Length: 372
Image (cartoon, rainbow, N blue to C red; front, side):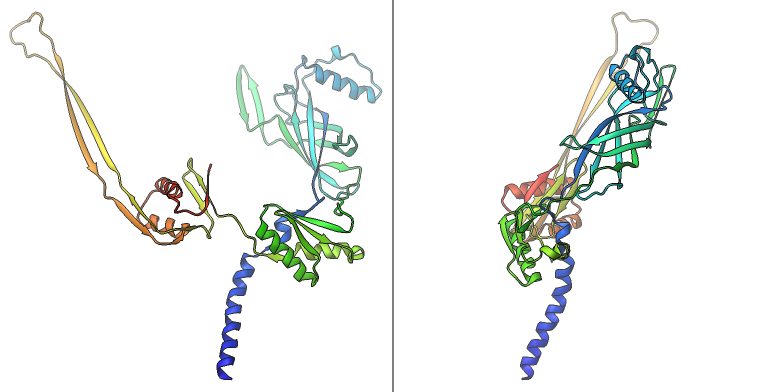
């Protein structure tokens, strides 16, 4: 009886130790993907920026003239485009992104970019611009003073510029005029969850966790990146169901990968990247060639000697120095332990990169190597 109690106590202690580690490595489903149909919606339009200090489009820009003529015509003022000679106006493209769910009156951040030859949009104001979706419908209206974190000043062929003044932003500069609601039930009676990184093991873990959360077999794997979830019993409480699903936690599986940036000498590897038994020998032979050129002039005493001149003497010195070899034996372990061991052996980062690439070619590294 005492032995059984000790065995049960040992299991409880082991579970209490492993549980925090599992929770620490777990991820919510809302951080791993999205529901099918839950997506952003880009909108775009073209407009006019006014109030520029002679830094707008040049008078030869016909697009600007026609855009300004049309804008003034809508306000009841007819004008000949040839009469427009101002550089205080610029034609721009206006872009924004509608969230998956947006209501009339919501505010959107807007980005403005010059499409003419304007030097700077600093100090300008965007006139009312309709923003359209792919279906040609107007979903938002943008208007307001631009925020430009740049400048461009020119004087006597001298230019002083900071960042890119031909682009700017309007924080909360657009108002939603047509509501948008995401359609999650792409298939009647069910919704689908899409993983950001396709993986069969992770998809199976997601389906098992959802079924465990609801104590019913409502989730099934369709592909490596999609899980089908039945909603037949939850139509009246769909929001509650989605909230429970996106807060389900799992420990995702991942492909072993090492990312190498040779420009900066950076190596990033997952903690689960394993290597086989390997012996690394690394050493350098340094060859130095020194050349010394010296001039020799004849010593003449008592006058001038015809046809005499100096000459150049070249002395070459060759030296060979062999640095101490570094031999590092790595038993079956992880890349993290290998890099730590090589660091203790004072191996430079760029040499570590060459070693990892050679180990991959030798079949000792069980991971994909991505070189940037």
